[in-house]
Amino acid sequence: MLFALIAALLALPAQADELRPGYLEVTQRDAQTWKVVWKAPVLGGLATRTRPAFPPFCTQGPPRARIEGAALVAKSTLICTRDLAGSKVGLAGMDAAFTDALLRVAPLGRPVQAARLTPTAAMVEVTMVPDRWEVARSYFMLGVEHILAGYDHLLFVIALVLLLLRPWAVVRAATAFTVAHSLTLIGTTLGLIGLPQAPVEALIALSIVFLAVEIIKHDPAHPRLSQRAPWLVAFAFGLIHGFGFAGALREIGLPESDVPMALLTFNLGVEAGQLLIVAGCVAVLALLRRFVPPVLRPTVLAASYAIGITASFWFMERMIG
Image (cartoon, rainbow, N blue to C red; front, side):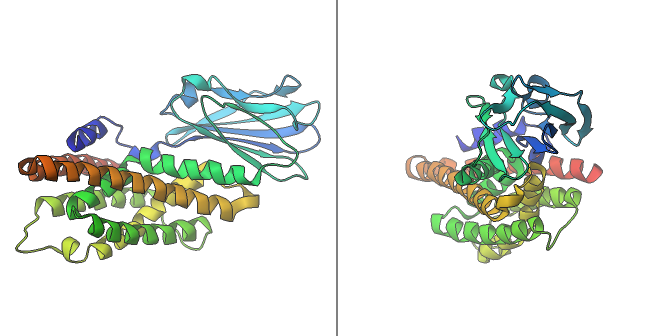
């Protein structure tokens, strides 16, 4: 089961950390004019199958579109004959997409409204007084989705479990990883620290290669640094991964009126997704250890080689650019 999961990840695109949710921002300029920014990842169907949708009393001008990285960015002007409050905005054609989107509506003189758009709830009513907890719910789910769909972070957590095997050792290392990437995520998002995204993505891939090598070279008689002090290794690499999380959050955007809430809940969502990964891997390993002990080590080795090969390809691709 564990090897099947790794093998499935091998078929995914090498730009693993570029899978982002869509982002639709509608900002009011004056009584009738709104600025529309629509950012859709090329992967997932949003860029090709969906478009912003507004009430009939609004007219959208021709969009000015360009490609930024792995996303389509389109800007346009929206003219509405009356206030959007009480009407619905969102995305048309989202039922055919495979990625969610974040909606941000910023009217003049009222709080910013944030909502998560899904194929089953692609339109949201604009309210006079937004639900403050909607920001928390939206960014929490975005955090969960990012760790589960950010395949490089996913492989790092799986490799950490395969390296340590013991549940409590995994918990301690995962805690160190959490503390570290929370520090850099918060610091980068608030503008206190920062690193260019390209070398960060390459270092994240290299951290996965390092763990795969450590698993393969495991020798009970001569424990390596990653086994003697796993929390230290997890903390060091967690600092790097935090810059990657910050890059994803920067692409998604933060509601200026609720930055602390959005930042906190996004980070909590990342941790919830991470715990799901750890629990699933530990459960699979426990089943192997209990019912078929002889295949445990070969399975771990096979998964480690698959992880190492994938991460090595990502590293070379990101270094070449």
